[in-house]
Image (cartoon, rainbow, N blue to C red; front, side, top):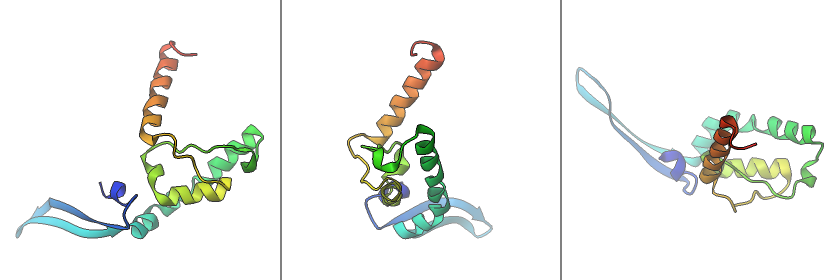
Length: 120
């Protein structure tokens, strides 16, 4: 929930009651998480997305300037930092015309059809 909220807010509260217990009783976690802290935590993962993007372009024989539209797929792509990295790699704003979650579901359905032999 915090990751989702931090896609549109700069900070949120994380409350996890009864996360553990010791001799003194139950323990709860109540912290304030900021977008910048989340970005710091996941930065190494986000930075690793650059190389596959560039490799894909190379394999396809295209340059970033040749790409007319960039579609982001998956919930994590709602993070502003992901949009920033895509803009750096492709020198353009990613399209917001596709729901990232629906695109994942559609891709999974197509792949299931391919595996089953219903889609070629």
